[in-house]
Amino acid sequence: MGISRDSRHKRRETGGKRKQFRKKRKFELGRQPANTKLGGKRVHAVRVRGGHLKFRALRLETGNFSWGTEVCARKTRILDVVYNASNNELVRTKTLVKGAVVLVDATPFRQWYEAHYGVKIGVKKNAPQHEEEEVKKSDHVLRKLANRQRTRVLDPKIDEQVTSGRLLAVISSRPGQSGRADGYLLEGKELEFYQRKLATKKSKK
Image 1: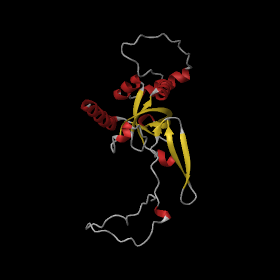
Image 2: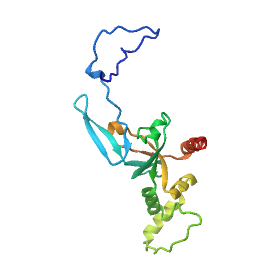
Image 3: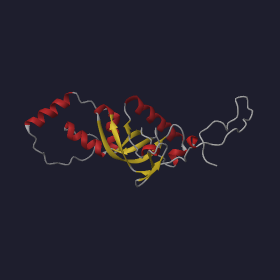
Image 4: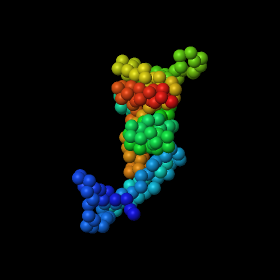
């Protein structure tokens, strides 16, 4: 039997059974879930109603993630799935779905931040200082960096995550429909909320 999105097969509100008065229709069809996993990119094109195409991602390892407060988006590696509000099974099997909380590689964001503001972030407290050659910057660039420094605000929680090399993010695209796992970095109240959830999950183990 095919997967159908109709409600004629459901019981009535009273609990009684419904009579079958027609067969399944093509426009009511459903398909198996993509259950996108972490791994080398594997995307299938699926022809759908109207001759359009959907892109069914079966495996993905990278995505485009945006840093809202800094108005910056970077392509980065997805390292792990750590939380899913709807189902713990999807965390255990590392399934990429919309709304899943994932860990992404912090390197692209750290590099951008250091180039944009001329400030190193994610430096460990007691780490030995390596003497790096100072790159000569023009007066124009120095003025530009000084101007940006004036309005620079970095959340200590983000800095802490950059030190560990991993950032918490949420997938906001639908990998089984668009073939991409794009999203945004967690910040502020939302970040605190998920960090609390992850802490309680850890303490239960």
